Image (cartoon, rainbow, N blue to C red; front, side, top):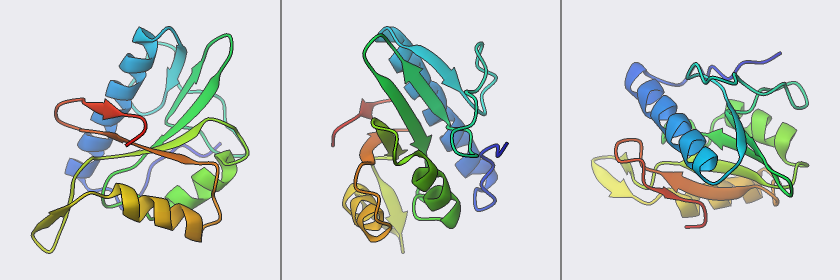
Length: 143
């Protein structure tokens, strides 16, 4: 079973990632989902693997089953993210969640358009992109 430790993640990036996992998991619980979350010692633990990988967050209610892969600015276009999202792509309701703002060469930018292009390049047309601020917890499932 592949636990989701991305080697590209720095200590600060890991904190941001885990904060976003926690914010997403708590938000989904507040919406009535049964939630499993990896990385954060979640009470229900992590979900079983899907096609060899453990999702960061899974949410299930009577009508929906959602899978969330949480990525930071450093990892949103990594090979590890591609492998996991490819494994989850056939699952309707798969999301990649990224921060709403990233920085490159001392300039801030919105990573959503870039991530959408990366997903197209990878042939992952069913994966949806959302954002979560790792510091404030503000979530947008459809930016």
